[in-house]
Length: 157
Image (cartoon, rainbow, N blue to C red; front, side, top):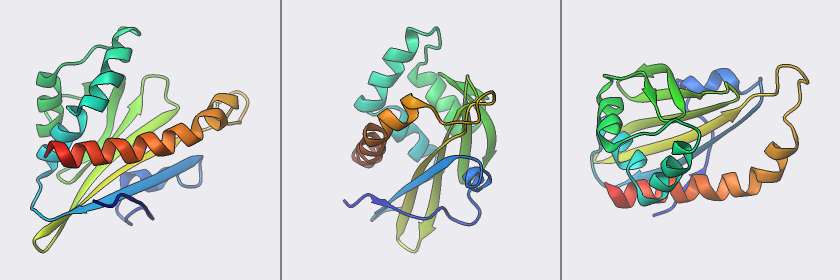
């Protein structure tokens, strides 16, 4: 399985942040049909993301697998540290509780395969207009973590 850094699809909700701050997009093709709900469930219930969910409990934004299921089918507008900013049958864009980061997932059917996308956006601080030290310090980790999350989601399908 080869996760690769790629351009955002033209219809990606994350497109609106390209000229605002940092955006990235990772994709992997899997040799099976994958529904959007299955991808969301697989992504947010991986062992790796469950570690992140455990950390989020410390900031009073706990989450459960039942909430993942609700997010996957569109019956909730909040999950852990994120609020749904926009959703469609094939993608979701979520904003973190501070409003500085976005997380995006999309599925794209390709004959007998499916392309799975995961991307992020980080916008500058409203007051300073800058990304900040933490953004720059964590960028290497963010890139590695993004690839690991997408690989874990594929294994979880």
